[in-house]
Length: 389
Image: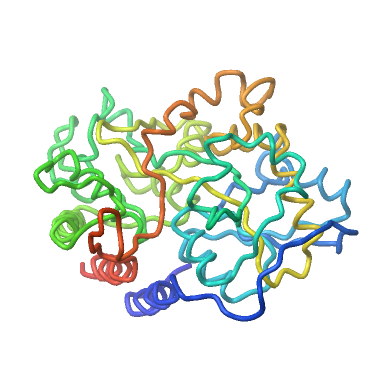
């Protein structure tokens, strides 16, 4: 998606304004049984999340599903969580692979329905750390099936950095890099308001006097300090990224040397012999734990439930983790997968779960009875920063 500055403000403000709307309408019910498939299922997904062998024949978890169920899989990729929320609000989709900064908005907005986990036999195999995670569980009800999780890593050019950078300061503060040149015009940042949390995580360590404990719970003073860092960063960033494939191309052609990214882009660039590597810096990392959620008005509920069960098979989980550089939501996938290998989960961060600050939507009412800056303000300010240069 490409927007000019005005359209960005309208789009994200509209998304934010409905973020915590109170759901209304008929009393919520959940599916009680699965019937014959309706012939298709439509899914909003992150790029690289649903592969049918078109990019690499070795990665295909769609073809067999379609053959076994008769449910044709239609995929609409989305580059940001806000885009996912907007698409689900428009309707016409059955499922979405939502991150924590979108999932609770969809629940509060009444756009997704409760999942009957009794109809998903493989639910029992889901990582216990994810089964009742707060980004898809509300009042004891499950609104999502865990899919994959992982960190937002720092990707860097290994020709510029002979030794891996240790801090996020290489993308937030102007400085001379190891090759003797400034980082100005050579770094990227994520094109989404949730990226404010990355700057907050950096300041949590860089300026401990601010007292930042949670990058998604910022009082006005903390928030203003974070915004100042992002305004300074704007002078360093020639182009923000939200499309994974475009960022891959940017790193090959635009002279970029450092950026926040997903392991997916790192893996693709490495596979193409590009001089990149990644690291989780000393400040830690934000991250995503994605859940497959069912639209309240889904017209293909049976196929949707069949897909959710399929998505939890160890083969799918392991293949996807290998392809995306993520961590399976089913631990059994960590062993015996030819593509992932028996060390793949450890390499992708299986043991770093507690070190990741997982995406979630900022709210005004936060812990300790404090008043924090809500997502609506995050969206307005971040789009203003991006459009200010």
